[in-house]
Length: 357
Image (tube, rainbow, N blue to C red):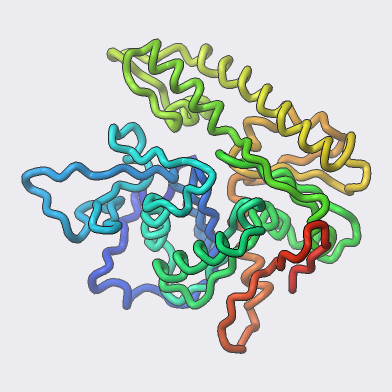
């Protein structure tokens, strides 16, 4: 899939003189992933770009100030490239870690996302569950997103819950649904019944697919005597490009086989967490749904967990689509003053919390 309309033909709206022409007040699902950022708007637009940020080296003809390229933003007086063009840059930010949303690169990604998000929108976004339960984390992300996007309101909810809302037929069911949201850095194991989030049967694991691509990138860097970016490995494995050195493409079969070996090991780790949390074959659940950017890669090794395991359609966008639908359900007919109450309230560990829909 291409990385987003902006990077494949759609011009970035400049801030000067054009904000007044933008439509106001949309509902927007914003899934800021460690690997890719996904945006889904109320008019059906879906955009994805790599969550990659690189510093721009100034040249003799460039002066610091307003961005000069469509994929550039200025954060704390530092010019940054965001998205596809940042991949492979020697000055790409490498602060991908569990708390990355406190770094300037996170601000750069949100600023770039404003390309598609009109001011005064209602924006629903998410955090990994182990951060969501910390009020400070929710507050930091809420305030940052609301300020940068000039949003009317911002709702921060657990990642994975969004995927549940992407299929509204499940909302008022009385059966339990398990969601395995496999991302770049984390995997969220979420349990829902109707519109209730079951805290005792949900957890977040710092185990995504990034280590797979990073390991292969490091091995290729040694073989090819050049720095290979993990994003290059991901794109190559998905059939979206070749990894080249000295004018030649490296053997794709070796890359695919190595990725598969590591994917099998990572799936085994996640499977052990699922069994520990939900038991063998999750007998109490009506269905087990797999989503997220890493689901396509790991599902072949996880689908044997039980009969009826489902890889969600358009799995990488599932959270963003669900965030949008959650916003429409919560606020679509709302005429009351703006509040930013969380859709899922965290009380004592183990409680079943209601999502107010």
